[in-house]
Length: 70
Image (cartoon, rainbow, N blue to C red; front, side):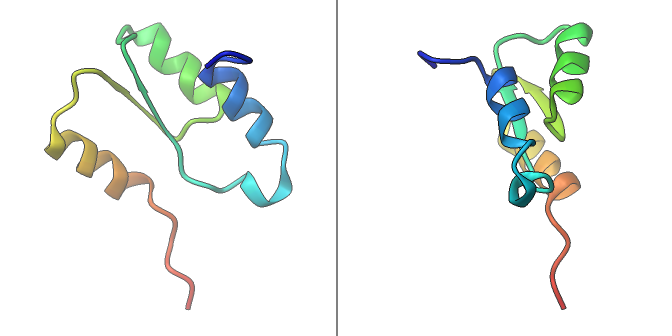
């Protein structure tokens, strides 16, 4: 991203009241344990390193999806 990286983007997004609970997954080429920790600290709900399989992506989405409104 030309203006900011994904960590900066999610940090900025999380400062907006309506965006605090929006589910977000970091999909990145950086797969080390410290990269995952950094993503979670920045505000992502999950971290997946590329290449990611479809079952792995669907599982992550299922784990973080927002609860249904009743």
